[in-house]
Amino acid sequence: MKTAENVDFKPLDERQILQIVKKRFLVADISIEDAVLNYYFRRLAFNLRLIINNLDKLLLYGQNHIIDNHVIDFLIAPESTESAFDLIEAINQKKPGKVLKIYEELIDRGEAPIRINALLLSQYRLLIQAKSLKLNDQNLSRLLHIHPYRAKLANQLASLKTFGELSNSFLNLSDIELKLKSTRLDPKMLFEIFLSKNT
Figure (cartoon, helix red, strand yellow):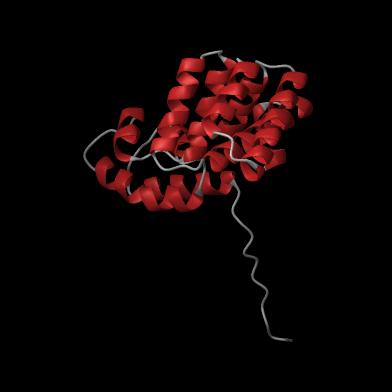
């Protein structure tokens, strides 16, 4: 015990992930714009495991090509959380057709309705935090230990709704979660009811 060394294995925050990825590109002598890197992170929902696992594809491609958003779309399959941000964005823009299309794509990819609902709950929780804290992107990123681009998205989406509207959406999704767990009601019908209240 006297000679033992404590090693901290707490998860890396999104800022540390960004530094790791930038260093990998630097070592490989490949340039990539911050906006493209942010898009890559968002597509993989800022998940470190997925970001690192998919990095070799980009590094290999980047040896002979410029990496832009179209390349990210072509090489990298999106993570569900990224689609949850897209869902909320479409809800806030009052585009129910687009919302249903994204929802159906998630279902077709094998996502369970209860997981989609949980992802939406998580994203609305972040929007409520952004709305109530009223911080700029950088300070929100630092306080919540999230990637600066995610903080920027949260502030942008939160600005489109009142605190009451965001809270109601969160409560409606909580109600759906309870029904998904305790009843046999059609999940898509429940989501469409939520959509009708929020677009």
